[in-house]
Image (cartoon, rainbow, N blue to C red):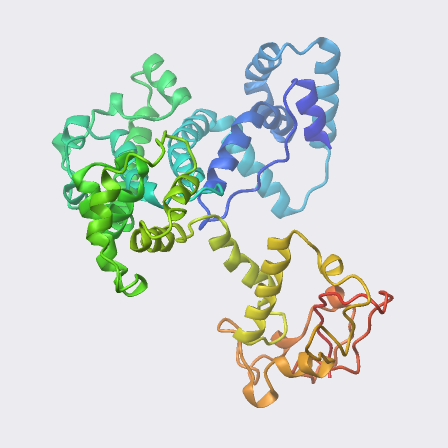
Length: 464
């Protein structure tokens, strides 16, 4: 509440404070850096109230500079002082007092270091974010993976390495590159973000610059070595997939890479077709439309597919490659798995989870909810279109007590039976302490007031 009011006093866009980031999701560090940098003046005004009397006197002038910079009138300043006085009188636990002390240390006592670090995060992580966002859309860009990875690696190296040592290297040479001191840029030229670069040029002999720039160089080298290890910079598969780009059609190297790609996917191609002849004809086919950068690649290849008998083997090859999915739903599938199977939910085998995911996919692909899909009297419990359905089938779908499936991260039932208990608040079920199995039973199944003529997708856990 107070933060929102202070932000309004300073005429800043109000945003919720970022309480840190998730270690294995590095883009959250970028989001936290952007939000913290934007709200830092508001944080400083707010946490000024938690400073000691001596520190308030020490930082009184910088506080006035913040008000002046944001054109805060006297009435608004007075209101800000009221908020600070209330915070100064606020009762806190020892843990809360320690936390406020740490934040004040970063905002006021170490303000310069904090600004320098935020500048670096904003600048460098933006490069990585640009690469990630390319493949978050719905367009198939598997033919761009190789080029984009090279661009990302070169962009990161260019932040601290002299360009002449990297621009003319092949993917294999980049993969095997060993960074030496004579290849690195001087500290005054290393990329550190806009704010940090301004500070460096205005204060070249500042005491904080030497340790900051030393840590930046170390971080750059560590990041480059990690990317060099993780990115398949010299992957024959990704290089061959690049030949799917219609812009490369008519080039001899594109034909060669498509032949290599066909060798990798040979079991998926028709055996009675001459792909080499098709590639020769394809490279000079004047009937195919011109392709411009930005056009939909799948749409362009559709013109190839819709020529019956002309490119049967090439069409099969292209379809196999264009079906390689790299979008955000690949990772989100694993996130959904964690929402369904965790340390506190019931046992579930792979077949049951697969069935749940299949139903969700079908509903999403049709743009319908379960109620919309099964609405009407044509589908009821006990009957369907050509196949009977019963609750007992649902009950039997899960593992039996003898086939119990234990989550890999869950302790053995004999060691910690409480790990098998469902969340009482989430499910509204009172559990007995001696129960160790969660199973599906038809006795406790109910439609919960839903119309009897509507078959809906139900997920339920009850206790036997």
